[in-house]
Length: 118
Image 1: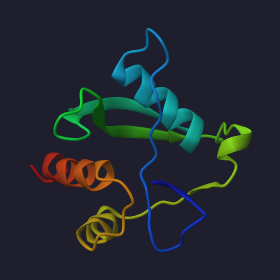
Image 2: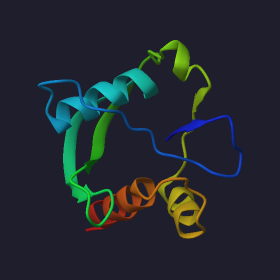
Image 3: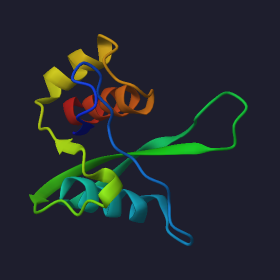
Image 4: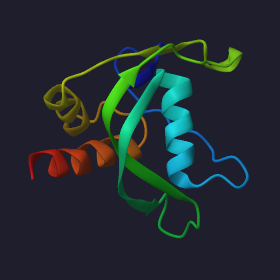
């Protein structure tokens, strides 16, 4: 999980906007590489969800597997980001306790848990 140092009590799974012509999975792979320094052998879609009820904007959630770690490739505006590795159980507990800033993180964790334990 990549988190911001600005708050030690609230966490956020990182995300990023898609570049023009980029597919959601290409964007997920790029963001994972840039912000976490991680490449994934497999990226499983966990679905695409509207951000709000009447919004056309969507979030695309993925489970990354077969990870290889490397250096983060942060931009100057991302230098406050810190990579934090949590066991799934701890991340799920944080989600159920409301310790995430955005709804996409808890949703992704709960969906990933279903895939991993199936």
